[in-house]
Image 1 (cartoon, rainbow, N blue to C red):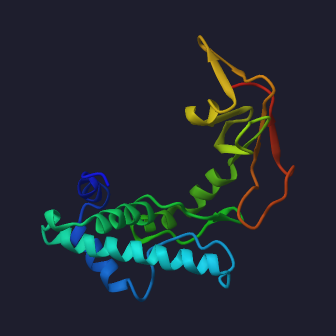
Image 2 (image 1 turned 135 degrees about the horizontal axis):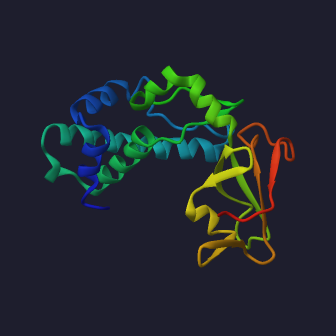
Image 3 (image 1 turned 120 degrees about the vertical axis):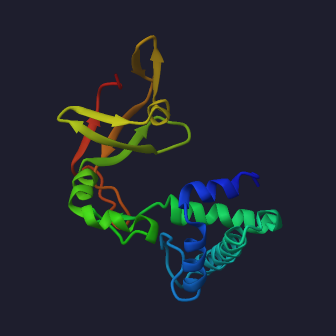
Amino acid sequence: MSPGVADEVRRVFGDVAEVAERLQRDRFAAPVHTLEVGDAEDPMVQASRRERARVVNAGIDGLAKLAEGREDDLDDRERLGLTAVILLEGRPAILIQDGDFRTPPHEWSHLTQCRDRVREVIARSGRVEVEGHLDYEWVGTASLVAPTTLMTNRHVAQEFCARHGRAWTFRQGMTSRIDFLRELGYDVRGVRDHGCDRAPR
């Protein structure tokens, strides 16, 4: 595990003591924020939740040590747990459903104060789906930033396009599209889809 995880915790959370106290207080009452996906009765889901709880609890123990200035006492189990806490609390994946987002974790609770603005962005964002890719059916997300312009990350575009000088072209045999309605619990294709018939600029 990277020896810089303690520094990353401080960078992401700032007040480590406050986070440690809150998560220690809530560890048995309310779990660290996670995306609850799958049948609760499924043995695999149950096993995954137990393992996740084990890792997160070790991270909470690690936070307590950091708050007490005992970074040198962190073991590998706690360092792994700290990484999990960063991902779940500090940089969470927040579930989008029915065009809205579920209650975010504590560190991101301020998002609820601008829910309407965030929902506007959600409505303009979708999943980039590809045909002809050897490994993936979808490669990331993109957002509508103008009536005929989508914006995505370079690493997403590189999955189905190639750059030649200053121009981008689709890789041979590949096409892409964006699905604005693909989300958990809503798996209808073709509704409000925008086909991508031009490569990124």
